[in-house]
Amino acid sequence: MELNIINTQGKETGKKATLNDEVFAITPNDHAIYLDVKQIQANGRQGTHKVKERNEHSGSTKKLKRQKGTGGARSGSIKNPVYGNGRAHGPRPRDYGFKLNIKLKRLARKSALSQKALDKKITVIEDFTFSEPKTKQCIEFLQNLNLENKKALLVLGSHDKNIILSSRNLQGFKVAQASELNTFDILNCNQLILSEKSIPVIETVLSAQ
Figure 1 (cartoon, rainbow, N blue to C red):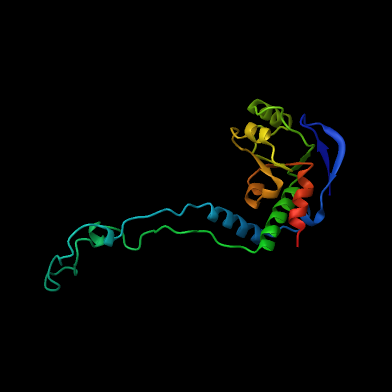
Figure 2: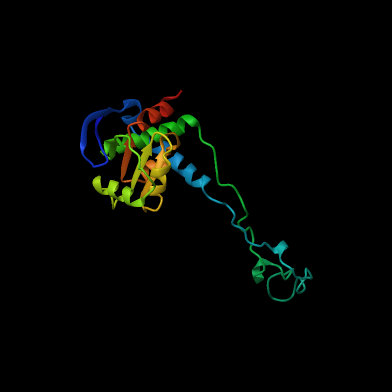
């Protein structure tokens, strides 16, 4: 698969980028995508929810009334959740994370990239940087690509402090390194912007056996 390479002004440079069909042109596996996104979101949960149970409330454990003959239900301690003291089987702190096979996670990322390619939602841009961290430069960059009101993900080949700092105040725009790219971020954008140097990194990571 070949895509035209554009510059930061949104104009074609005359160069083309060749994308590996084993990464960008496979048949998307929806179930692999589902499992990977589910794991990413599950691992992001804090799991710090907690409510008091009956043994954590103060109060007498004396039996409130006799067992039989009252015409009502049996009743023991005042700490019974029926009386509003604690919750029976309430949530406790827990870890929602779970593990997935590495090959399945690679398949999920390749499926997400292939789906973006099928939808023609991938743009390849020549490598660039900003002279200093300024949000204004990033806004102009998105305007040149007609993406100022869309969710966009820019994938860089390596860490670039000025680009990251320039983009962090922009809602809907995210910058990621190719080596840290995940399925959720790929699917959560309207347009995927790949820098030239990010392509070989992505292909190397996802082609590993």
